[in-house]
Structure formats: C-alpha cells, structure tokens
Length: 207
Figure 1: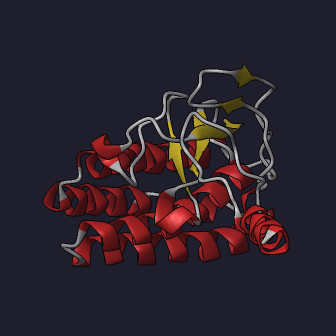
Figure 2: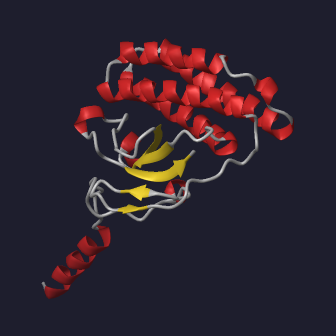
C-alpha cells in the first residue's frame, strides 16, 4: 500500500501545473511571447521604463504624420472592440481603411517603400475582414493580424513623436496570447472587453 501511495503522489506532482491569472504569477514565456521589452507595466502596477525604440528607417515626417493618423484610427477601432459592439467595430474599421488610403507611399523609397507595400497590404486585408464580419470574435482575430502589421510599420517608420504602447494579454485566444497597440499605458483589453478589461501588460514603448 505504501508503494502504491508513493506512486500516485509522484504521478500527481508530475502532472501539476499553474494556471495563468492576470495580476498573479506569470508563466514562463514561450519564444513567441518574448517580444523586446522597453517598458513593462503589469496588471499588479509594477513598471520598468526605458527610452522608446527608434524607427528603423529615416523617412519624411509627412509620412510619419500620415501613419500616426492610421494609428489614431486604429486606437478608435480598438476601443470599439473593448465595448464588444460588432457594428461599431465594422464602422471603425471602415474609418481606419480611409486613413490608410490617405498615406502616400511615394514619400518612401528603396527598402522602406517595398516594406510598406507589404505592411499596408496586410493592414488593408485585416481591416476588410473586420468590416465584412458581424462576429465579434472573428473581428478580434482579424484585429490581431492587423496589429502585427501596424506594429511592424510603426517600428520601421515611427510616428513622428506620437507615443504608442505595444501591449500583451497572455490569456487571449485560449491562452496563446494576443498583442495590441494603444496610445496610453493603461490596459484596456480589446480581446475580452469588460470581462477582463485590465488583463495585460505593456511590452514595448514606441514613438
């Protein structure tokens, strides 16, 4: 009996794991979650600040202002996802498409021009998918893809001084994790809305 009891105790210990809770202990991050961190702000309130990352390319300030306009529209879109209202989400995505259309790629040249063609195509595709859907969870999934390309764009070209925060929730998409961009360090989670509004942390500070 002692042998069986010891066996089951060892088996239980081997299969025990810790569930993630926002504001609680963090899990060990997978490689996909280990994004460069220049500023972190956890739900618990602890922070570690550093200078914002500099853009990859030196580009015309006019293009940076145009990209900042796309970012501003994106933030409005993010807020409609926080509210979990699919009709407003579609309308905000349409407005963001208009902002994207106002950017002038002729202001870019060389590698910067080629990269923007790829990024903008991804942004446009994700926005159109959001507009076409009435399912809030499908919209959130497309928003995640939108975020990836807009983040790469901001990293590459900058926003001409406009502040942006790259934020992360480890519980989004069945604990696979999800990123979004914000104009404030305050966490307002677009993937859960008021269910877990403050679940997440700042991963990077951009400008």
